[in-house]
Amino acid sequence: AKLRLYLIPTFGDFRLSSITTRAIQGYQNKLIVTLAPATANRHFALLHRFFVLAIQWGYLDKNPCTGINKFQENNQRQRFLSNDEIRRLFLAADKDSNIYAAAYVKFLLLTGVRRSEGLAAKWSDLSIVNGRRLWFVPHTKSGKSRHVILNAMAITILEGLPRVTNNPYIFVGKVSGQSLTNPIKAFKRIAKRAGIESSFRLHDIRHTVASLIINNGGSLYDVQATLAHANAKMSERYAHLSNERLQSTSDNLSLVVGQAIMK
Image 1 (spheres, helix red, strand yellow):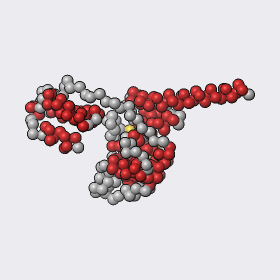
Image 2 (cartoon, helix red, strand yellow; image 1 turned 45 degrees about the vertical axis):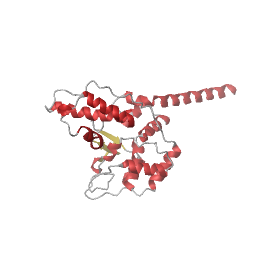
Image 3 (tube, one colour; image 1 turned 90 degrees about the vertical axis):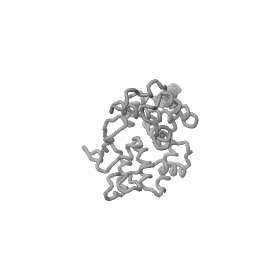
Image 4 (tube, one colour; image 1 turned 180 degrees about the horizontal axis):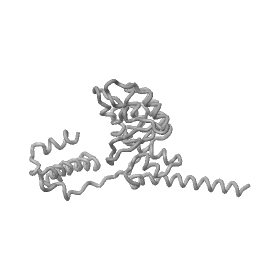
C-alpha cells in the first residue's frame, strides 16, 4: 500500500539517480503532516531499502537516504485486554460469519505470535514431537525459524477448522489457494461486537499476551521466549508489569506478616 498509494505517485516517473536527499526529506515532511511518526518512518525504511538494493545490484553508487534522521516515535502506548474483555472477544468471534477469521483472532491471543506468522500458518507445519503439538514457523521477523508449542485451547480451535482442498493454509482466505489477506476488517468487526473501543489494534493482542504471562507468574524471559523477541531489550517495555506484580507480592507478604504478628 505504501508503494502503490504514496511512493509510485511521488517518485514513479523519476530515475533512481535523479532522486535527491532533499526530495526524500521533502517527502517525509509532507507525510508527517497527516501520518504518525512511526508510519512516516516505515515509508522512509522502504525507500531506504530500495536504494540499498539498487546499490547492491549496481544501479547506483550512493544512497540518498543517508543522513536523513527518522522522526521520534512514541511507542509507549500499550493497551491490554481485561479478563472480561477477553471473554467478550471470544464470544463475539464465535458469532462472526467468517469462521477462519474468528479462529485466527483467537489463535493470536492463545499463542502471542505475530500477525504475519499466523497468516502464513500451514497444516503441513503442524507436528507432534514427544507428545507435544508443535507448530513450525519457518519465517519470522528476525529471519530465524522457530517452533511454537501449542496449548490445549489453540489445538481445539485448529481441530474445529475444516480443511479446504488444494489450500495449504490453516486460516483460509476468499481467494482460492490463499490465506486470509486482510484480517484487520474481521478483527475490527469482532472487536466492535465485543464492545471494545475502535482504537484497540490487532497488534495489541501481543501486548495482552505479555501482560497475561507476567500477571500469572511469568518472567520477562518468558515474554521474550513466547513473543520471539530478538533480544531482552524488546521485552523490557513490559518491565513495569513485572514491577507491579512484585509490588503486589510484597504487599501480600506484608499483610501475611502483619496478621501473624497480631495473633
